[in-house]
Image 1 (cartoon, rainbow, N blue to C red):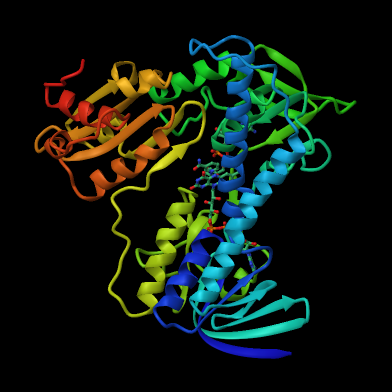
Image 2: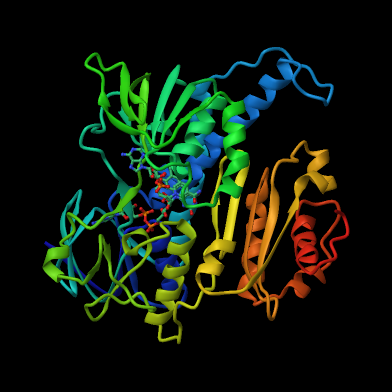
Length: 464
Ligand code: FAD
Ligand code: NAD
């Protein structure tokens, strides 16, 4: 049995773990990262990146389909488009491959040792890794748990055959003729929309009374409209019960009785759960916060020298939260004075149109006891949006009524994901409505709607 010692051991090389390891290496910390599957974790291999690649391919195909149908005011016409889906998936795999090998290169450049295999705690300072060449024991002064999360499985719809998780949905051999999506949250709607654009007949089954319950109805309304235009059937207040006897349909309990949804594939996207099993949590007996590992504002767990970051530590289960925690923990281990002091973690849903939310919504601000000014600016009054056929949606700003501090910014519209940086920066820098209104926003851009929303909150919007 081989043994090595290091100052820092990171378990899991997803966005949390690999960023932590890279930063630690840069800071001169002797670092080892253990990864069971592939560097990049869920996000790069079977999450953020491949899903956005598929969404992009679907958008392009749909655009071409509209042009072929003569359904565009732009005067463009083309022949009916076809798709070689195998080639699409190969292109997506190529993007993933370039990024994951990039991560391996960055780890190497930072002097981080990567051990391939499954790690398991022996005690709070020692981990055993099952590698291809036998068991490796690693002793470390500090250990970061970054094991991530996995899809939730429904007992009456176990994964296998035509019942798939997001991982299989990102690697299908062909576009299914019919697709039932159980769960109208992030993944269900992002991938459901993509497959609808690629030609599948998609039905979304959501247990709550509306889709994307995380976002307020004003933000989700344009998404619902576009789903209807794509021919996606959305069933809310509906619960999947299982497959039909023949296995060709999903049975769903609705307010109006049981329904059968014809489905070549059933994509189950009812959430993800922290990966807390199989790596010896019981050996170290950490305090938990519900299903997640409990951490403090330094990402310290209840055991000295053991930290946890990313999806295994709680909501929101987003890659950029994991990365920010990873960077912070590396600096803390290097002796720097850091604590979790972020004002917001922006969230984006890559539906059509996209939704962005940074900071507090009007309702959240009011619930927190704030007297607020709220204003929105529609893209129908924005020149750039009009010239891109992207008039659906708006930017909304939420600020304190007394001192005009920006508490939140939300937007729905085509391409608004790229505005998330400006929204996050404004909140993190403590901008006021006057700061946003007084910043020159380049013309013509959709970002001008942010400035106009601030002006409107101040009572003097210029372009509406
Ligand atoms: P993970 O990325 O899950 O990485 C954990 C790693 O640890 C894995 O590689 C795993 O193999 C390894 N591991 C686990 N246990 C062990 C062990 N015992 N030994 C060795 N290795 C181990 N987030 C966004 O912010 N934006 C998006 O657009 C987005 N899109 C998504 C789309 C899909 C389809 C999915 C599924 C997720 C998406 N997410 C998105 C969420 C995002 O992927 C996660 O929040 C992020 O990957 C969490 O990072 P992490 O480092 O905590 O864990
Ligand atoms: P989710 O939490 O976003 O949505 C799950 C949905 O399923 C909810 O609307 C819930 O009400 C519904 N649901 C639960 N049980 C159900 C049942 N039995 N029948 C019908 N509906 C049911 O979960 P997800 O879409 O699986 O995504 C998991 C996580 O991955 C997200 O929470 C997010 O953290 C991350 N993610 C982020 C992005 C992004 O940032 N763009 C994209 C994909 C995934």
